[in-house]
Image (cartoon, rainbow, N blue to C red):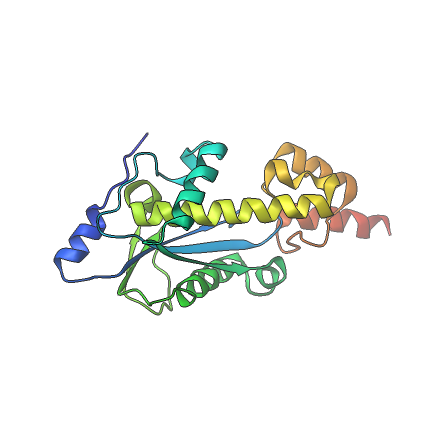
Length: 211
């Protein structure tokens, strides 16, 4: 179901006297390879965009165009946080996602007064927060963060594809697709695969059994 993004949550906070409101979202949480990337975005009060929405609902070309518009807009403050596959395996994906979010907020030029988070609440967290299920469909601030996080990570995965072309990361971005699983079973995991994720661990177990 299509939902039009807006500023309903932001307006409610501004009515209560909150000024700097950051939206935050992540990309790559469910992938089998590569980093998890979080983005934080603070939009101006009078920001308007006719096509901005949850990054998953946007065609790749449009998503890239909107990304360029967002990051080149001098009235928008944004930052990213990146946690790599090694740290994901060490602390687990949930903690790594939350750490990426905290990193993105810490990298903002000015700290926010309040944060709108896509999904469930994050604890511990350095700022007052409002967690919104499917928030990237309702809040323009979160939608902007979702586009920045998604495009940033997609570009990283295309770079990884040049290093490990046999896995076709440019096509599936590290997610669980038939193509990715086929290549994973054919070649085994590469250096950026998350060893703690079961579909990655299975080829390792099979190899150990052969040995």
